[in-house]
Length: 131
Length: 69
Length: 254
Image 1 (cartoon, rainbow over the protein chains, first blue to last red):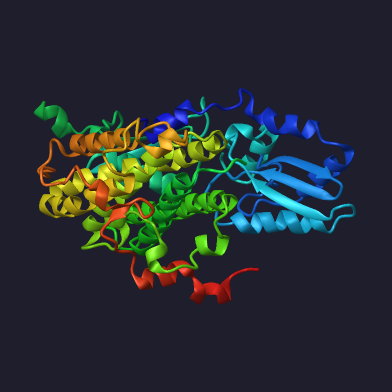
Image 2: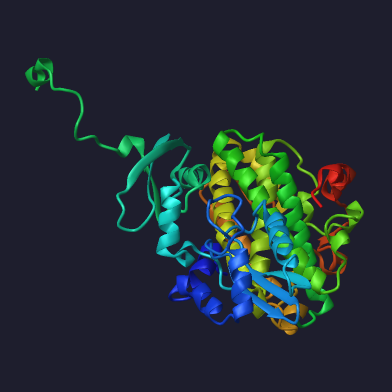
């Protein structure tokens, strides 16, 4: 029987975690890139950076007006769980070419602070937040 | 029992004294430190029994100390 | 997403409901601890357990269970939580000795799930559970010194209830329906053995004796496989009302 800690240690994580989101975004079409920019304007309710900067947005796919946003949370018990998803939906549904927005919460890979770029960490440090 | 709490944010940073907790044993002290200081995502968080912390600097030596010894 | 066999949906339902009631109990007791650190830890665990429940709700909804029902629109007897959480019989030490076995049993059961698409979710839960379980054990060690009779008496009730939640000893590698279905990779027998060994080791050097614990519970023929308990019972009506949250709907954000 593994302990909770062993399970955590056994879990595989991307070698270059901060590149994971960048790789996903690199595959975006021009329109999807536009959607990434819109979502990049939505602030994390707790921290003065955007959801994209917090590496909570894993993927955005657009297909004939149907948009699927794949996202995760640093904490499973996040009190702003629904609020954040509502923010994403309301920012995207008003855009031309978007008929339907589906936010999917995923946990693979598990979020870690290694997913933040050096620039974002510096930005947070300047705001007095250490991560 | 009093425990001093030490932490650093990133590997290579200086380890800083960030506070203290009181607990009945080491195991509980670890969890109290985690519960109390969990707001940061520490790279390193440790507790040290206050009684095991031996100060190098301290009060000025007095004439009586040197006379007694 | 592939359909789970019905026993697997029931298994996850019981784990989810245990998480929900764990969160509820943690919240109820989070101003009653002996120190501020205990209360902070309890409040934080409450939030995390509800977060775990929320993810299981999504999974169960994708298996056809109705979301409003999952989120609390049901009768007290329809919550399939571990029986040791039905009520806390005593003061704060009794609360710890009631929630700890339920939380540990739930984690062992979650950790045994071998469904690939849940791997990340389970890893994330494990990050929280490491601290919950370590805290419970640390607290049980100190309470075993301060109040061995009280802790022993509570555990004699709550450990067999947690064992009933895990399942009957007869469900080994060959007979456990979830192993057979490929949903889990550890049999109920294995989980029970690890659970028993853990608590025997934890209290080995203390004045708490576990000799009076019925380690063979539950009797297979009396076991309710959906509610994972014996002899009925449920959370109280006041608990169910709070979990339904109907009185707070006025304050809910649309």
